[in-house]
Length: 130
Image (cartoon, rainbow, N blue to C red; front, side):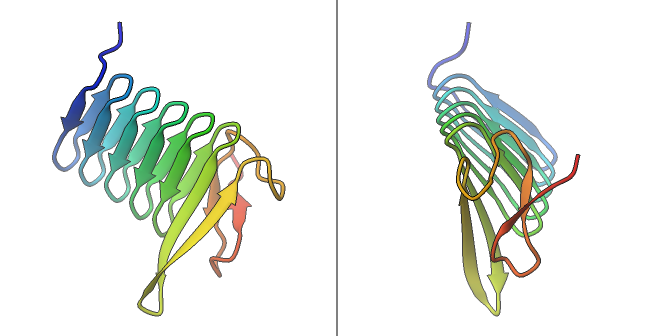
């Protein structure tokens, strides 16, 4: 069965997986997966995946995926997707200041389980053709 309350961390190019309610962190170009209500963080160019109600964070050029009611956060040039009632967050530094763009699944045409990225001006999200 799943492992509850587990926390895993790894270095560059590593892979981390955690069970339900766990935390997984992976370094540069790493992969992190966390279960239900878990948190997954991956470094630049990495992939972070979290289950329902979880949080997935990936750095610049990374990919963040979260389940229903989850939050997917990606850095500059990153991609994010979330399930039903999920939240997409994109961060970018513009003129020396960190800017945050937020989109909500089910609002303004944002679809569940569909990858998005911030547009060039960081004012809206755009669907990534698969």
